[in-house]
Amino acid sequence: MRVVVFGAGAVGSRFASALARSGLSVTVVGRASHVAAIASHGLVVEGEPGPPAVVSAVEVLSPRTAADVILLTVKSYDVAAAGEAIAKAIPDPVPVVAMSNGLGIEGALADGLRAEGWAEPMAWILRAVHTVPARHIGPGVVRATGTGEIVLGQNPSMPDWPERLRAAFERAGLPARIAGSIDREVWRKALVNAAINPVTADHGIPNGRLVDEPWRGQALALLREALRAAAAEGYEFDAGEAERTVFSVARATAQNRSSMLEDLDHGRRTEVDAISGAIAAAGHRHGIPMPATGRAIERIRTREAERAARG
Image 1 (cartoon, helix red, strand yellow):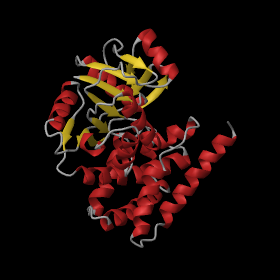
Image 2: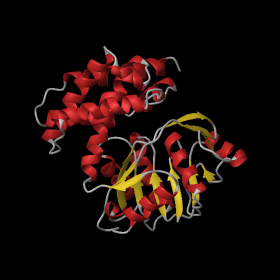
Image 3: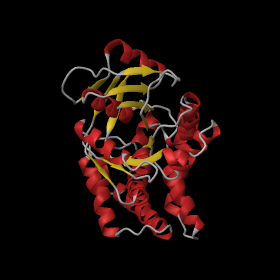
Image 4: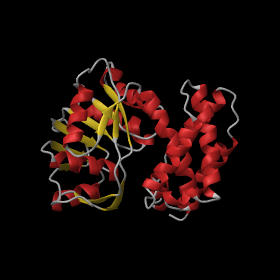
């Protein structure tokens, strides 16, 4: 299996390293400095044994890139543009595994693929979510900051691919399973992200601090609004179980800094629109007040603007 990881950030690089170490041919598409470092000394994942992984690295996907399957790990706001780049370079469709955070990812990806000529893009998209943590350290170097799992959806147009990918991830040491309802799993992760990410990013704290007040109360307010929005969309979750999940994740990743906090610290755009923004939009469609979520979105956008102003 020839795998392309489109979006070689921290998590994408961790996936690429694990899959390459398991014996697969892996190409990563990433930023110039990351690509140059990988070409020079391989892909380093701190916290994993062994030498740097040997992967091909390119800045731009081209028709010369051999691909049987593409793992899409870009930020949510880059999904549509990534779809365009994929379809332009690879006119004959291959499976694309959409692993980005947030709601509505499949639609954005399909729009991008369709714009550059894929006639029936949804037939080639597999949705997936994951809880595999990683942190970018520098060009060519990321750090594994805990364990997690990959949850794969199904697509009747590609009945064999979920199991092929599950087996490949497992051989690479990345726990994976196939979900009966991937939409429910997407919402499940969105609930956790919506409770953890904005609070940690706003206050500059690691995940583990969420178990303490006042941050615990803020996370719970966001979670409760998200639960009401999910229920209105047809995805009921037990409130007690959801609360336990959020704080279990916070404890399990106590030293980890959420992706939203990392983005703010590095002056990057966050995924608040695809996570909290999409949940707020779902709530508003059903007439549900979302005051805590609205305040969280505004505070993160303010933080983004402040960092942009500082350069």
